[in-house]
Image: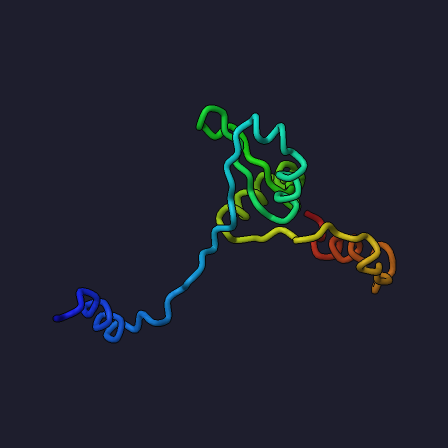
Length: 126
């Protein structure tokens, strides 16, 4: 008797389906009702701290999400153009906040007023 799965094994050999992803890029997500969330809030906050997203439901309808804060959220609100680039995948936000002492200030290479003088020379008597 021929196994009904023999077609799949032949297809696997022909198409090289042995190198398929066994996981997902979508992280863990839980749903919880308002009453249970209220009764076990500390437990759900711990799950969020560990990276899970908790969907809060009211009578089966999702009404809120609990998730870790997004790094750079204030940047996206302040600079909508940056938010658009991030949405389109053309820019990424830093994973950690900037530390002011990370980059030391470099000394000036030219004396003060050099840029203004060069611009004046370039422009001439416009």
